[in-house]
Amino acid sequence: MPDIYKPLLNIAGDWFTTLVRRRLGQKRRAEKAQARTLPVLLKTLARTKRGKELGLLAKMPAAEFQAKVPLSDHRDLQPWIERVKAGEADLLWSGTC
Figure 1 (tube, rainbow, N blue to C red):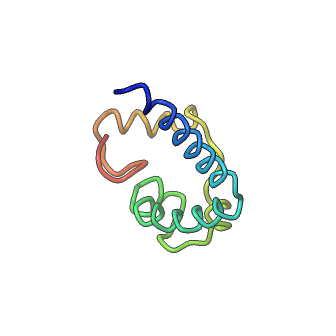
Figure 2 (cartoon, helix red, strand yellow):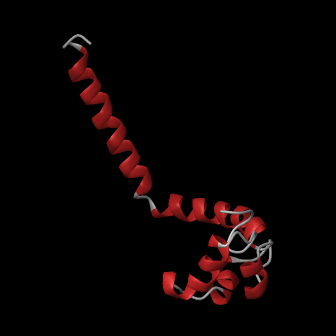
């Protein structure tokens, strides 16, 4: 690549990075994205064994989801992870791992 294009690529890269950073930093946009994403994820999650155990529904408000799903880390999920490793399907997510 000729050296003349490198400054143009740097300028374009800097501009794109600034644009993405600005978009990601907008709380309003993040909230809308989360509101669109949760129902999509819940459709699959509600059909899993963990989702059924927690009482998750495909169409559930975010506040109800937060109330039903406890904060957990890998130690809390270890029994489920062991079952996934053993080949059991539809536990934490649809299908097998």
